[in-house]
Length: 126
Image 1 (cartoon, rainbow, N blue to C red):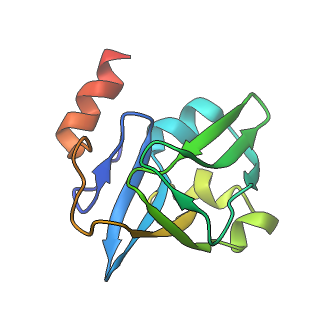
Image 2 (image 1 turned 30 degrees about the horizontal axis):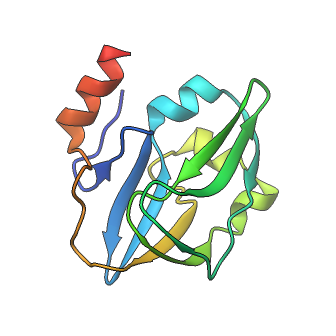
Image 3 (image 1 turned 120 degrees about the horizontal axis):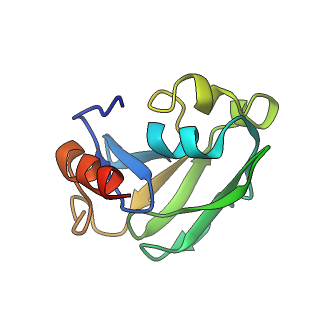
């Protein structure tokens, strides 16, 4: 499994990568693998203010639907519109295809998130 070290991971399978004063958020390779071929990514409300752990959107595959959670508290400032027409971008490159960007309430506060090794241990534990 591919796990880049330039981001942090939530136990709920989201990744978060700093981009200036924002964080890009997507789902991990393990998550997209479990879901299978994605057919829908959405229900992300730009402008929504979310608590850490709150539902930020949905991904749906031929097998299942799954909520996407905000890894940190903040305001959603962008949705990756390319995913509306081609949700499979996440299957093709889960670490290149971000789902939304969030402006954190407290920049740099990422308590509870894991580094790549910590997330690998969560995935291995099942």
